[in-house]
Length: 168
Image (tube, rainbow, N blue to C red):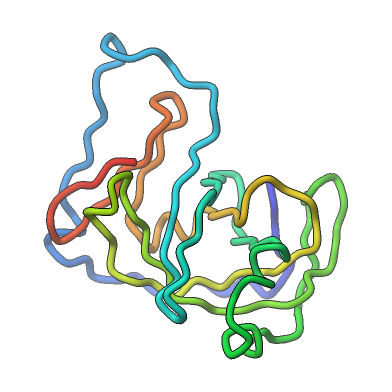
């Protein structure tokens, strides 16, 4: 579980649009084999048109993390928006590292065949220097912003779009 230690600001309740409030239903457990694999998805950073593969959905994290090897692939004009970190990460790789910085990027989630996307949502990433086979970790706050529901047993994530419920 990754935590950022900062002031405990609460988010204001938001009114959902009708398509965002559509029921999300997973298949019966009788029809699937439970998955033990992490939920890995892809996204689109709209600020620069960058396709990000291997986003790990981490339901235990309250921080969104971008690894430095992904950050350095962004255009310089986007990298220059990184701000100094204001918090240390706790519970990250059994250490408490200071991030290299923080950056807000507009992110869309994309389904498996690139046919369905969520609307872009601003995500605050903490950029860290650490080895990972993933490019970023998406935590609980981001899942809430997308109204996304992951199921680790099913090995999938579902989220509402204007075209209906998308499944990855």
